[in-house]
Every structure is written in structure tokens, then in C-alpha cells.
Image (cartoon, rainbow, N blue to C red; front, side, top):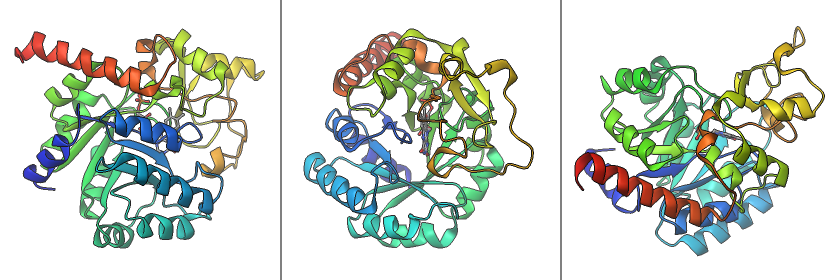
Length: 312
Ligand SMILES: Cc1cc2nc3c(=O)[nH]c(=O)nc-3n(C[C@H](O)[C@H](O)[C@H](O)COP(=O)(O)O)c2cc1C
């Protein structure tokens, strides 16, 4: 995307923020609330139980959000048996933004772009960002240390600095962003948009159990543990939810010979559903409530931060 196209995208938003898609947690209602409140909403294609349900959800989102951009996340991995059918739905509805996760390839990127979509890819290191750029993606999502879900482990200071040395296109930054000052800080680092996931786990519209919402409200960065023992890929989990499931967070081991399996939440079915993932930024979340109310607060906090730092 050119700088003009990026400016045009940002002009549609109330604040420079996109919501990150979250397995199980993101719903069509959450996407609609996010878009109506002025940010880019998103959800994984796999959250609706079937491809037909995805079709119905996207139709509802389109009808509700008007011109606001929204995104659907496709897992482009051999283990995702729904990829072909879900892709057909995404193409038919002309979904404006597609976030690709895992094993994306240039053909898929081109197919989506030829159909009018912007394609974003998330990466946790500069090397992956270069690969994504070679595939021709429109936006790179830099996932920094402390992010919820399949987290990164590189400081956002280093990650954005390295990517911005050679990438002038749309750059999003994620990892622990949960207040207006952090959104402004993302821009100061060189990102175009902040990408926020965990903060929405406590939203009314999120498909998260009441106990999960409360755990997000009650806990902070030191209660987050990074482990690859559930899916084979490093991800962040709330320590108390591991304890509640009878496991010792300090002695988690992945059985020898188990390969990566992230489809459906991993080979330990409890991961994501009962052992809850959240990033280190949850300390900023003080209450659960409608997503729109939290975005209103975020916009206000962003305005205050801008005024304090930039005078406008
Ligand atoms: C519970 C949970 C589930 C997630 N599931 C997905 C997913 O299915 N696909 C994806 O691309 N990212 C997923 N993510 C990552 C988010 O989209 C986003 O990158 C991340 O939450 C940003 O960091 P933050 O949580 O610190 O705001 C998930 C994150 C969480 C917390």
C-alpha cells in the first residue's frame, strides 16, 4: 500500500487501531461493535462452527458495518480442513481485509488481492516479515513480546525498528497494547496502526466465560506464562487457569514426539477453551462491559496522551 492508501484507510478510523482476531473469543457481535465504535474489527473464520455459519455471520457483519473495514482471519495450514470452503465464502463476500496465519503462500495472497482484499500477515521476527513482503502482502503485523495467543518474544522497540529499515508499507504493531498511551507509542515507534487482542477478552460480546472475563480483570502481566506445552508453539496463558485445571504452571512438559497442532486449539483440547490465553497487557483492563464503552475510553485516553505529548 502506498502512504496515500494507508492515510485513506486510517481516515476511516476514529483512532489508529485494529482488533486482533481471537480463537473462540471473537464473535460477529464483537466485530460489529468494534467497527461501529470506529476501529477495524476482526474474527477468525473458524470461530463460527461451520462454513454456513461463517457465511451467515459475514452477511450480518456486512449489513451492520457499512463502509467500515473489517477482517477475517484464515489459517492457511494443511491441518485446517475448512480452508477451501471458508476461502470461497470470504471471496464471495469480498471481505475487505484478510489476516493470514501460518504457511500462507503467494498464490493465496494474489487470489485474495485479485478479488479486492487487503492481505495482512502476522510475524514475530524480521526474517518472517521479509518473507511476507516477498509474498506481496499489503500489511505486516509485528507481534511483539507479551502479546496474547501465539506470542512473540522480541521487544517491539527492536522489531519495529528492524522492519521499518526496509518496509515502507502498512505496519501494525501488537503486544500488550491496552491503553491510549500505548496506541500513541506504537505510532511513535513507526507503526501505522496498533493491533489489540487481549483487551477485548473481557468485552460483553466476546465468547469468553464469565470466569475468563473476571480473570482478565483481576490479573496483570506477572500472571501470564509463555508455554509451548499445549500446542507445540509458544503461546501466552493465564497462570490461574492452568492451576484451576489441576496442572502445575512451573512444571509443564510437552510429551515427546508431539508435533505442532494448532487446529481446533491443539491436541490438548483444554487449551484455549479451559486453559485461557491472554497477553501481558491485561493489567489495563479494570472491568468487563460492552466493547464500545472500552473503545470510547481508549479513544479518550489516546486523545489525552496526544494532547500531553504533541499538544493536539
Ligand atoms: C485468546 C486469544 C486467541 C487468539 N487467537 C488468534 C487467532 O485465532 N488468530 C490470530 O491470528 N491471532 C490470534 N490471537 C492473537 C491476536 O490476534 C493478537 O495478535 C494479539 O492478541 C495481540 O496482542 P495482545 O493480546 O497483547 O493485545 C489470539 C490472541 C488471544 C489472546
